[in-house]
Amino acid sequence: MIRSPVWRRLRRRPRPVPTMRMEIQMRSHVLNIRSVALLLGLFCLLASSGMAGAAQSQEGLPADLVIDESAAPLSEQLTQMQTLHAAAVEQLPKGGILGGIRNAFGNGEERPVYASVGYLTLYPEKLRGALVEAEGIWKPTDDGGLLRSAGYEIRVEFAGGTQPTGFDAVGGPAGMPVTVIGRAETFEDTGILRADAIKPAGLLSGVRIGRIKELQEDWEGAVKAYQQAVSVQAYSARPMGAFARVRAGFLARRYLQDTKLAAKDLSQAWDLYTRKGNEELGYYIWVESPEGGWRPILARDAIEQPLDDLNSQNLAYRIVDLFTRVAGGNAGVGVLLMAIVLRLAIYPLTRKQLVSQRRMATIQPQIKELQKEYATDKQKFQEEFWALCKENDCNPLGGCLPMLVQMPILIFLYRGIRQYIVQFEGVHFLWVQNLASPDMLLLILYTISMVAFQKMAAKSQPTADPAQQQQQQMMAYMMPVMFFFFFQSFPAAFILYWLGSNIFYFGEQALYMRRRPSETDHPSGAAKKQSGFVNSMLDAAKRMGGAEEEQEEESAISYTERRKQEKSKRRGKKGR
Image 1: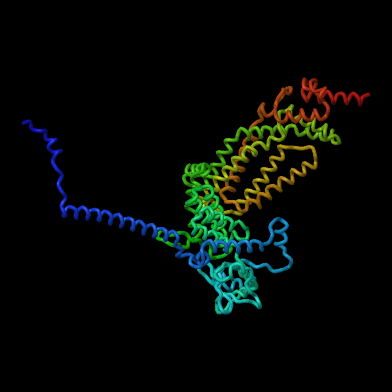
Image 2: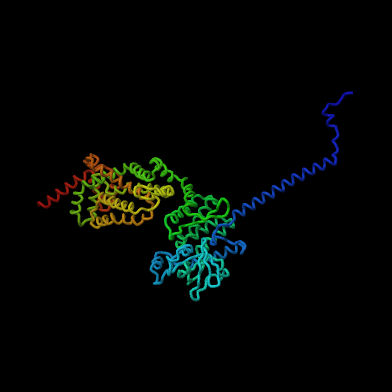
């Protein structure tokens, strides 16, 4: 008998019948797996709900920014805030130049001064008797109300028959953002506002719109709401305006991934809330804490690192940083080094300007002669003037060329200095205490250098018209004075750059003027057929004068020879 292979015998072996004990063990394993899965799911659910609760936590926020979700649905509260904001903005003074003039002079009425609740609480004597405007969340009391803002509160009493207005659509002012206008008074070392008017607060209602949209996780809508809240000039310098602008930058960076928009908002916040303020308390904002909740922090401390991180990705920032590193980490020396390098880069154009200026100086006697000869014929003078310039290969408008070429580079470097502003903060250079802030003495020196620069440019662009000469002299002083007022808010680093550039230019001019004139400075011989702006002007002047028929004949001889022929003809006529 042939035995079957082993594998066949194994295959034929019957399966064991499961016992009761084995079934119980299998079921217990299944139950254990299901229990573990259930526990893991429950743990994930609790963890996610805890994270959501932390993200939506409002612990640590002042009353201005707390949105009570249990009071009413968020959609209903959003509608209320939008109604109050629209009513408040509608009551603002009209803009425009004429509106600004009317608002500045008014109609003889006293205009209120803005003061935060914190300032009125801590320094009641400083504004005693003044007509002030303050905003916060309204809490009614038996004899008036409490105005709460940024962790402070002040008692408000009604003057005469004053009553809140503009809150009918939201069911009254209780818990709403209000603006109180009234007299600041003191009582037992405590500030009191004697209210003349209580109306909706435009800035605070706009900020709360942004907060509600955050709770709704509408990040794009929150950014737009915060930006709209501070778009009104009257609101931009207020403490809650700082929170709105900084918060818009943070949300744009974190949720919208829009680094350009974030850098714009944070840069504007840096300019407004780190170097100037309208109160001694400074600008505090609230940021989310890693431990959960919110914490107050100075606007400067909250902005500087995120803003520098965003700007450090830009080319202009890296160029300024490169020069600073080359200067051994001295930012002031780095700025001056940038000015020198740029001046050296455009030296060929500067040399052309200086050559043209020297040639113009050599033909000044001939220009004065033409002025006398054609005092009554300006068109003929222009023809002869441009012919004389062509003969001597000089361009009276050449002084503008280096400035025009430098302007785009200047704008690019200014952008780099603005982006590097955090690194300039607190940096000393010579007498300048802070390269990130304006410096009056540096601005005065720059203005003086601009006057000298304008005078040199005017010398290289002589004109025969006395009115134009007077206009050039006026511009030599007017433009620097205009720059003086325009640049008063500019960082000292930028003014230092431009001052260094002007001083280096004066050095270039002094060295060039000390050297002996070369053949290129004083060209001789007949004028060659050339192209360029001067020759185009000459051809245009001839066409205007009707000299088309004589063009070929006049181009065959030099301007000097032609002038000699004309003089000899005039002498011959006089001899007859």
